[in-house]
Image (cartoon, rainbow, N blue to C red; front, side, top):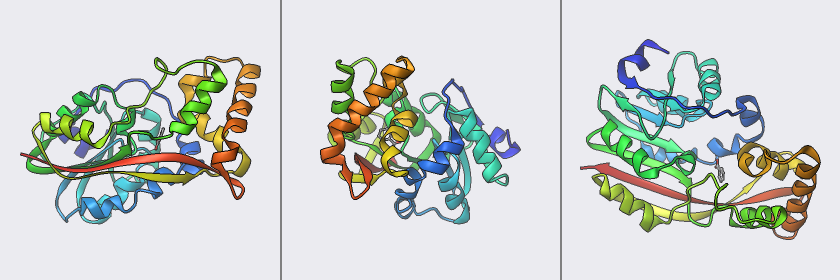
Length: 262
Ligand code: BEZ
């Protein structure tokens, strides 16, 4: 843990494994697509900013480049290790988004493509509010209502089951999420839900790679033979709608929000 992070943050890490090399090699679109989020954050020189769910640290580094004093937090030790390797001059630390605290109030909390993984969402909103100074801002993007609805429907059909217990994501509507933030003492300045059709890398294998990286709870319990045939079934079901010009297009929908702590 870097000295600067240990000064500011107390953490409660939990177990989750990611493959950071695979993430950077094939799924870098997740942070590249959100580069314009930095415009919404508008980091200022000398501001204290927390990057919640920093992954391999690429957006954290861009926030630091604006002159902010930034700390990147991630639940995954593998991601934090890779972020430190990528950007050894920056502070990264493992932390649980539902249960972290800072000793110095932050000017902003930023989060990209993470909060749809975090349960319970109200606990994360509470921890974020606690980390901010009054007037501090929360700027986030993550999966919103209807995100990957076609992929989820095809997976359920291929597995012959509803995913109610296995679904690991929280995809709220604007109303649902802004109400949750207001309950934690935020004032909403901006909120929107939009389609973000997202091309997946690696041609024909793009959808399987994506499912391997992001949809483990559905496929991990299957033996290899059953997994292969389920993946082929999912591809066959989605080819008509999501295969275009030699690549898979994931039916992402995103929610973006800017809120100020009162
Ligand atoms: C994402 O990381 O952006 C994502 C993951 C799972 C479902 C939808 C989006």
